[in-house]
Length: 312
Image 1 (cartoon, rainbow, N blue to C red):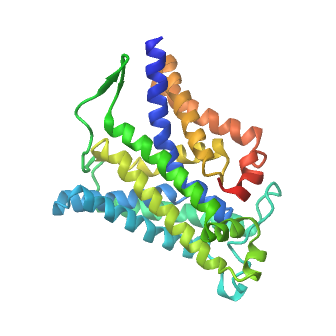
Image 2: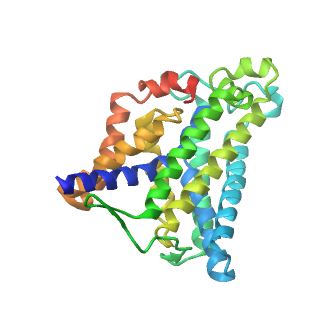
């Protein structure tokens, strides 16, 4: 029984990290109705620059964190301008970033945006690998050297801090989207883009700001996760995209609070799958969950249909 509880606790901790990673993805979808495949690569390049500054120039951990968050936001703007921005000739209402009905299949603009973000994914990852060609690269290590024990359960304080950070950011973002004028503008842009433009909301600026914030959140997530490991590898980009996407889809893409439940479900399933079937079973569980979500409701999950309208 104690082993079962320990695995569940570990799954909740891991799932919180997945939710933190998926928060930026779900925010991007909520404002653009597009999936940004360059999301993980954006965080990876920022992390590699942070690792380079740390190893070559002895930048302290807090400096690495600030650099990563700021750089991830700037890289996000670069991706948004090339792949998702609203052309000026469209008057700020429609264009490449305009919403299309869900469940009706991809239109040409969606295919172009998806393919473009995939191309930038390759570009950003290659830039990162060229900067630090080694497979393992040192990163500021803030991992706790002790464990807390309570009723026979063990937990590392640093991992608990990451979990609390995920919960705090998700709830704060949800409250902001619900109860502020700027949050209302974001939700209006997500659900009724043309109407939002007609009432004076600068759709292009809202989209760009949302993209910057979402990618800055990817920098926060990357630093929080890597600082508990003390190293960064070329697998970071794919890991963040996969785990974040599954967590976001399980909770309902565009549903900020839902990404917490999605991340926790993914972490719980992975922890118990690893106990039963080993590391291979853990990875299989991740892709099996993603497959089930896609088959049972790629556009039919409640989060995809109407929770974007509430964004919380």
